Image (cartoon, rainbow, N blue to C red; front, side, top):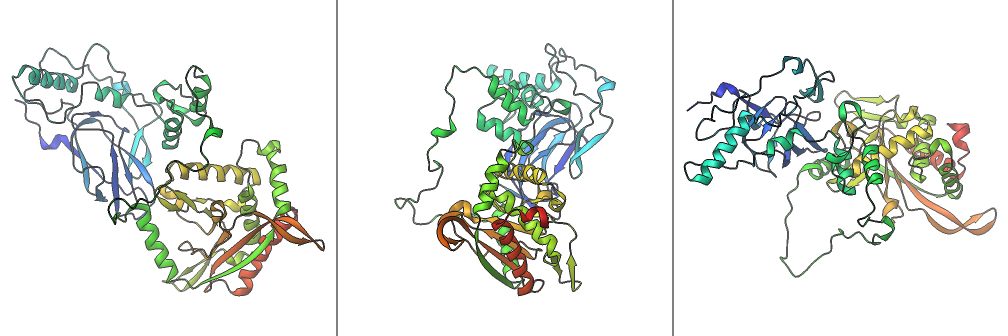
Length: 476
């Protein structure tokens, strides 16, 4: 019997997929003991305090052990999976029969360089290809699995526990290449990625490929029509008083990080909030006009886009609001760039990804960035980097029908703007009471950095632009 040496076993440790993260929860394993894995193959999905991330394995081999079950929170740096990289078969009661030769490796197909996809890990460079699977010659790992299963059926031996069917390794190797948001889109649309023809670099499936596959599908089966969806989401939780009197939910992941950050912000920065009610009738008309603009076709054009642009213009006119307080060095840090945060409610909790260098973007570029940010957040695939380095934030409570609120500052920022619901209400316009589109804005700011005058100027500028959006041209 061949003995597996410990030197041939590699441990894959939980990486720090963000900056300074200390732990992550294992959400799902994509492999099991006995599966063959290749360099760059995703083996599991984990949730950090900031986002859900898929982890690729950085070497080839056969999975020997999964150290933790799904739902377990693991410290960064702890080994989570072991892989036999010796090139041998998966562990079995007896050695594999010698009748099945292992195809010789082709040297020209060995990877020459690796491009990082996470900190410290990577996939094969673009000039390399994965070795094609031989249809008639099973690998040593497959031979061992088949032999173990056959012995179990014949009663002559014991198959390895938790061994998958022989086809499992092949399924993993044939996993289509696509980014997490694209996988989520395909799942929502009922598209099998294995049937999609990729158009991206190195065979990566894009959103356009998925939509093309939907358009090309035969119309024989029923198709979901968005207009037929119920007004109230079917997944909305409904309280039931017939069961247990209490349910305890562990505080972890995004919710745990958000809670700690909000407590720190509320009791560190002295908050002040100011309010203003704004007639946004002209802004709403401009939104409808922009939707017809050929330069904005296919982009996310809505009131939030113009509110974001108005905030950027107000910051340009009052740059001191775009700052942070450095307690350790007793300094005020003035930011000469704007990373605009947009608060987003996701199934994992509230997150605040930001649009990098939003101050330098044109309106079409800002619309494109806003659309990408929202789509990625809804898919639950916002990267940790997208939530770092924000300088000012917008939270749109109006989407829930709320008039306004007193938002808590995102840690490290000096201001946050809350946008209330836009409603048709009576308003005095040109000396007469008329129905007008109104909203209430609330600006919370750190009173160590922003005094009442500066905060009032910023809020007044935003209101003035939304009342007369032509000011975007003269002020912007």
